[in-house]
Amino acid sequence: MDGRSDENLVDGFRESGDLRCLDELVCRHVERVRAMIYPMVLNNADADELTQEVFLRAVTGLAGFRGKSRFSTWLHRIAINTTLSFLRRKGRSPVESRENPPDSPDTAPGPGVSAETREMDAAASRALGSLSPALRSAIALTAIQGMSVKEAAAATGCLAATMYWRVHQARKILRNQLAEYF
Amino acid sequence: MNDRLDTLLTGWAKRSEAGPERMSVLRSRILEKVHVGGESKATIVPAVAALIPFRAKLRYAAIGAAVTAAVAIILSVREDRFQHPARGDEEGPRLALSESRAATGRRLFQELERLFPDRLRWVAESDGKVGLGVDGIPPGGARESPPVILRLVLTSREPGRAGWRAEWMTDVLVRGEDRIEVPLTPAPGSTLALWVYPLPDGAIAADTALSLHSPVRISTDVSTVMVQGTPVELAFVRAGNREYRVLQMARAL
Image 1 (cartoon, chains in turn brown, purple):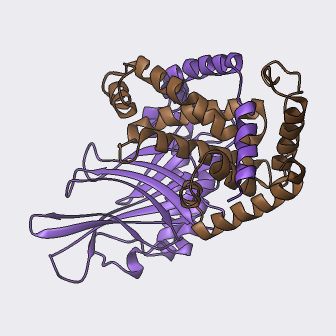
Image 2 (cartoon, rainbow over the protein chains, first blue to last red):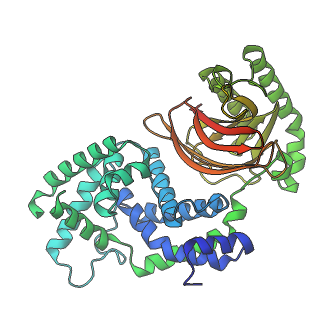
Image 3 (spheres, rainbow over the protein chains, first blue to last red):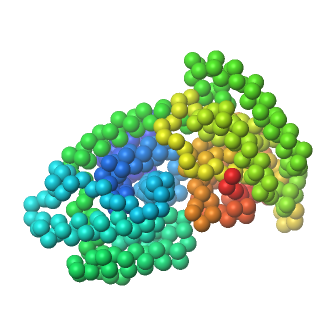
């Protein structure tokens, strides 16, 4: 089963209800989904909850997945829209980063991470937290996830021109706030 | 592009990733939930009675009459004020999804949500009939996404002729981001799977998977971003001596 494509696993679940197909899909994509969500919400608990919600929505919607796009594309779209909806409900004001304390076991830097890097990471968290959800999502999808501006615009349902502006504004703000680390 | 900023951000993201223990716990939680996800999240229900668990049927039977009365009252009000599009109507203003229709839909949705607080999934009007989709189990968390009315119209014409005319139409009222499946009236087995999302700029994104068995077989799965009230073509087919197309339009309620 490991060698099967995502689309074959979807078909396998739909045809036979084989939960192992679902398990494989979850295991394959959970890290990437969470990695997409975290930079937008800057909070581990929220990222975990949203990741779970994304997969529940995906399972519920599997009957309608027709294979016109790749499964991962479809799943990532659900992740982005679920997260944007969450951010919209939290309001438009910049979100204070509620990151775990630096010495929390699952965010404690690994060996070899210098104090300067830890300080830079803390500054990056604060800078990202100062952005509005729209700007933070724009920079997360482009600079971190590596989407093109057009891909990010399509994923979030805005015009490409709007996404270009958001990315430009986000970069300007982050460059100012993180200048000492360049 | 600022490579240094990108490098800083990607490095930050990498170091911010959840550790193995956290991912292991999260993975287990998700696997546990998805194994029952299809049960806890009601997928599709053609009618109230089919959706609601047996033990709740007695309770809802008592308000079934009230629902019927509410819908009948609202529909009668609507009929007094607006001409509901009918089979044979030509494309154009008669089939358009007007703001006044959206206003009526909003009233209907609100009335039914009051009767089924936190349980109403969708309302579908087609061929003079109204169907409801209601959860048997209340969903977790409040649904705050604004509701949308989405209209699907199947029209046909003789090839090359002007004048597309309506064969079938349905209006679906649903909250944004709630993926639903609706059984359709044209023929048994016809279904509509729908997910809509009102966008911040006023447009409406929709994922529409339509499977029609009658009067013509059409299967389509399309993602669109729509300007409110402006029709988009989802499908076009030729069958026999006629051409058919499916139009979709939507408005926020």
